[in-house]
Length: 58
Image (cartoon, rainbow, N blue to C red; front, side):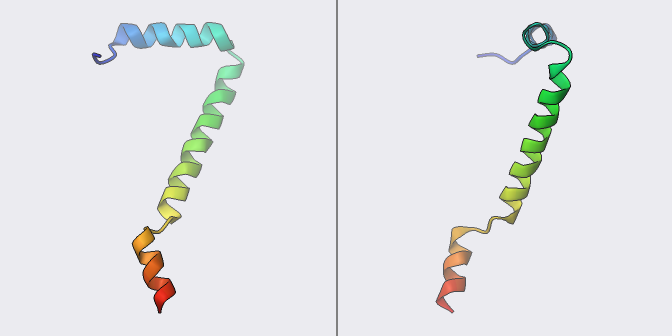
């Protein structure tokens, strides 16, 4: 598969706009942004499995 060009991205955005309407898109983007933010925070807070095993042995 090739990379997406400008035309393909515009077509995808037009289809999304037609499916969800103008009022729902800001809500969807807000939810997507908060989900990504939570994922980054969880990934940053999680310690590697090796360091957890060393902490329990002491």
